[in-house]
Every structure is written in structure tokens, then in C-alpha cells.
Image 1 (cartoon, helix red, strand yellow):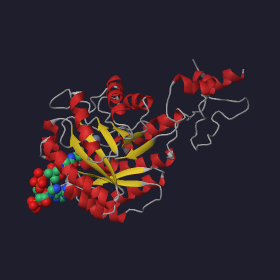
Image 2 (image 1 turned 60 degrees about the vertical axis):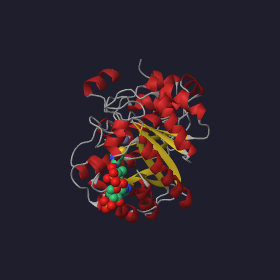
Image 3 (image 1 turned 60 degrees about the horizontal axis):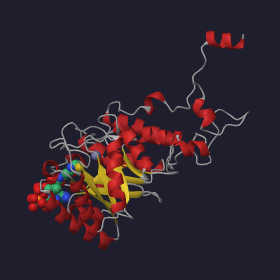
Image 4 (image 1 turned 30 degrees about the vertical axis):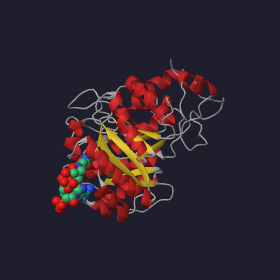
Amino acid sequence: MFGFMSASLYEMQPGQPAVPPSPRGSCYPEPTQEARRVMRLPERVTICEVGTRDGFQIEPDFIATDDKIDVVNRLSEAGVPRIEVTSFVHPKAVPQLRDAEMVMAGIRRRRGTRYAALVPNDKGASRAVDAGVDALHTVLSASESHNLANVNMPIAESIEKLRAVAQIARRAGVHLQCGISTSFGCPFEGEVPLARLSSIVARLVEMGARGIGLADTTGMANPRQVSMVLEALMPRFPGIEWTLHTHDTRAMAIPNILAAMELGVTTFDASIGGLGGCPFAPGASGNVCTEDLVHCLHAMGVATGIDLDRLLDTSRRVEQIVGRALPGQIIKAGPSTRRYPVPDTVAARLSA
Ligand code: COA
Ligand code: ZN
């Protein structure tokens, strides 16, 4: 039915423009009490942009350092509150990000943006802290085979290495968020038992992680599974900030994010244009697209603090840099507030 959403879920007064501006800066109106009742969502979520790390890491042609810096600056100017700028990993493992120090040194630091980097071990953590990151995002997998493929060591050894990372974070006074790849399924092993995931989380929390990132590395998670995993883990680890890291490989990223939001998760990784993929996970493809997610959140009245138009400009710039169209939808369709001229024949009938 036409107009159903705007009539019942959003407060529209007669004589108002079709889309009254929201006090939160979004072009969508505030949700009504009724809208809040039918779907319980947080008022605001925090997006961590990972396109310059997860996205750029699999680009085959080297992206110039200045272009990487330009994208990070545009993202912060669009109001993105967290950016995973790059990785401090072995340059042979991920040659694209071998300029991590130079990128960190070249960016303009915006107050209010937290700049993070991915690190697999103490060497990476020391490099990242020396380069001035605000947060360390660590990586290990919930499945042995993916951990071996990704960081060349068994899970137990990764955990020992991350203990040293936690000490470096503590001494440097930077935030520590520990990500767990293949949390919802492994492309080599299939199902990842919840008990194993939970025991990995326990060890990371015990060593000092303040945030845990659950990563769906190859888009295997579904919304009901996300709910079940979060419902089991969240009460066990009070005070932990949970981040959901999604890949849209099977078109389930936004549904998975909605499932997590309904359980109170408010931090999500996303990638400009839908860039992304793990070089060490067959079949991996892009993360949830940042501008598509921001559009969806704003349309529902959930604030992000991000300027969607500037984000779309950044996405166009990234398309120029990588030399191809990216999977994002809003860049093609425009926001749902877009209106087209009524065809002449229809206009004539309307005015008859
Ligand atoms: N940055 C730069 N160099 C590093 C490093 C880091 N973070 N960690 C280790 N090295 C160097 C060591 O100094 C050593 O150098 P040397 O040969 O000159 O003495 C060499 O790498 C080998 O060290 P080792 O600890 O045996 O590492 P490895 O070869 O087993 O590789 C990782 C382990 C984790 C460094 C590597 O697998 C890696 O960087 N993986 C990246 C994973 C990734 O980014 N995946 C995508 C994102 S999920
Ligand atoms: Zn990823």
C-alpha cells in the first residue's frame, strides 16, 4: 500500500514537505512511538569503516599511498567515528598494505574519529603504536584451518601472541578490540561450535580486550544464528562492547546487522562501496557497504552521525581509484527519498 510507512510509522503533519528534516541531521523524519514499538532498535549506532583495510587489502593493483590517505580523510570529514585505517602485518602476506606507517603519518586527524589498525602479533602492535593509532584491532580465527591460512599459526599460539599485544596496548594506553574471524562458520571446516567461540572470547576478555568483534568472514551467518550466538555470549561477558563484522557474500549482511541491533549491539564494521574480502578465505567477498547501511539506518530513524551525501562522494572517489563499479546499491539507486518527475501522460490524467 502506498504511503503506509510514512502514514503510520513516521510523524507527518499536513502541509509539511514530504520529508521533513530530522533534528539529527538525517533527511528522514524521527520514528514515532509506534515505530519504536514494532521494532526495537537502538537510537544510535557506531560504524567502524574498514574499507581502507579489509577492502584495499585484496585489491590486486597497488593503491597509491596518497589515494589511501585521501580516502581516510574523506571518511573522517563525512563524520565516520571509527576508521580501521590499515594493517600492520607482514608486507609479504598483504603487500597492498606495506605502506601502513606512511598512511598513518599522512592522514589529517579529525577530533572525534578513532583511528585503528589491524595487528596479528606484538611486532604489528609495536609498529601500530609507534605510528600513533588510537586502537589496536587484533585478529585470530575461531577455526584452526583459517587461523593457519591467515596468520600461519595455531589458535593457541595466536592467543599467546595476543597476550603480548594486550600488554603493548595497556602500556601505550590505546583501546584493545579483539576480532574473531570465522565466528559464524569456516569456509574450510563448516560449523564453528559455540563452545569453542565462547572459550576464545573468554581468553581474550581475560587478557584485557574491551571490545570483541565477531566476524562473519565469508558471509555464512544468518540472522537467527546471529541472534542465538549473541544471546548466548552477551550475558556471559558483561561490559564488553560487541562489534559485528559482516561480509555480504550471500546477501545476509544487513539482515544479520538488524538481528544484532535487536539484541542491543550498537557497533558495526562496514566498508565504503562494499569493498572487502579476506585473501586467505576462498569465496570471501565484500563487507556490508557503508553507505547502504547508513542509508538503511537513517531511513529507520537510527542515527550514525555520518553525512550520507559525503559518504556517497567518497564512494565515487573509491570507484575511480579502484577503476570499477562497486557493489553498493544506494550509489546507483539514490536514497529512498529520491523522487522522479511524473510522466506527462500521468500528469495530464492527475490534473484532469
Ligand atoms: N609486521 C612486519 N613484519 C612482521 C610482522 C608484522 N606484524 N610479524 C612478523 N614479521 C616478520 C618477523 O620480524 C620475521 O622477520 P625476519 O624473517 O626478517 O626475521 C618474519 O616476519 C617472520 O616472522 P614470523 O613470526 O615467523 O611470522 P610468519 O612468517 O609466521 O607470519 C604473520 C605471521 C601473522 C606475520 C603473517 O602471517 C601475516 O602478516 N598475516 C597477515 C594476515 C592478514 O592480514 N590477513 C588478512 C586480514 S584478516
Ligand atoms: Zn572481513
